[in-house]
Length: 257
Ligand code: ADP
Ligand code: MG
Image (cartoon, rainbow, N blue to C red; front, side, top):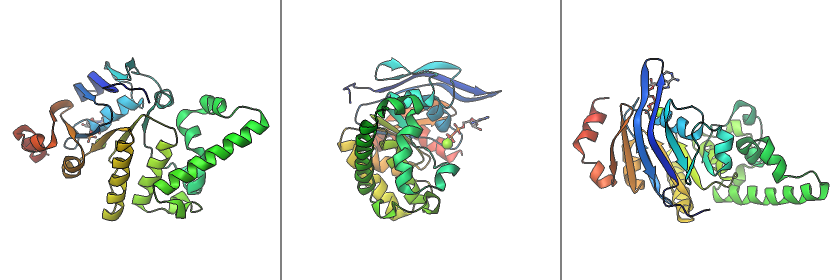
């Protein structure tokens, strides 16, 4: 990974849906190697911001910069190729496949056909070698998330928490620098929640950068070293969780939901 102090920079982001201003002039940065939380009450604009960063939405105006380059308006796969990857819910078509197959296909799904073909060139011997390497990485990843015992199970039969582990495993298969997670702990039981958070901390220690979007303030306050609070489409406060927790505007915003 390239050393860029602030890999993600969001400047004056604005996104409207008809008359609704979902994101209203939001600006913030995410520091390299950090575990940063983006929180806010329901309707604050967190998911819309997330979608503008990852290319699912085109912002009306503003700039999203990743590793010093504007990525505003690029397609999700183009953004993923640059090393900024979000987790995706396991699609219907992938529910029928096993956990193992889900990981084998992950790079293809996330980075798109073109790059996949360049990763796996046509020469047959080369393909077999690449496939072996891929298989090895898949197993390492399965073991890291402690879902190797589920390898042959259909993805559709996993519990909510196991799905989240698989979603993160899939994202990691694309070899990103930074991961964006939208409500990674929603519907996850406490045991798997601890496991998921432990893996996030492990990956952070390896140098990955995280932006976690969460409605639940407590988890973010406990696990993130920096928090950005959104309210009514704008950034209301940002900084150290211990300070943010006692910020009256933040408390008020949450009370008002
Ligand atoms: P959060 O994730 O913080 O709960 P969202 O980004 O989902 O907030 O929503 C912000 C605002 O934008 C809300 O008022 C929501 O109703 C509105 N909104 C989000 N997505 C759409 C959409 N696709 N069409 C119309 N309004 C939307
Ligand atoms: Mg949301």
